Length: 157
Image 1: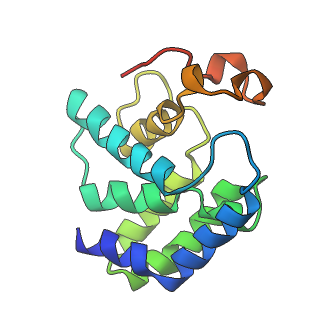
Image 2: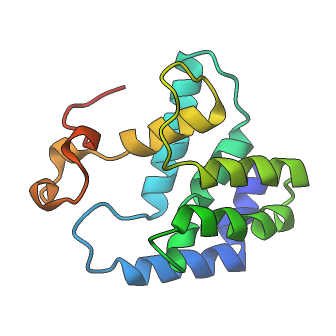
């Protein structure tokens, strides 16, 4: 996964990740770190295999690594900001314009629930992002701002 390796070494990506890390250093809830990103990628691919929705690994990992970078500038609209910030990084790392736009679209919509029967990159990614949170094992779960129906209170896969 040559393009993914380039993202990990990209100076802009590393800058944004460092800003997020600094902003979340005292956060007791789920962090938006590399572990979360890798979990989202792996869960997206597992869902794609289980549901027979073929996805390109480079696109999945590219989206996962970059899906929260907008948090470096703003938590409130991090999806929209991330969709804009990711495109130059993706192009620098060898993704085509079309691939970068597809990833940006997934990033922009990763907070919007898909329809129940939707089987797409976007829908699998949305679900994986939510499934990546192990609320059932979190010491801070009772203080979490997530609505109860969004919390993962059982191991689901």
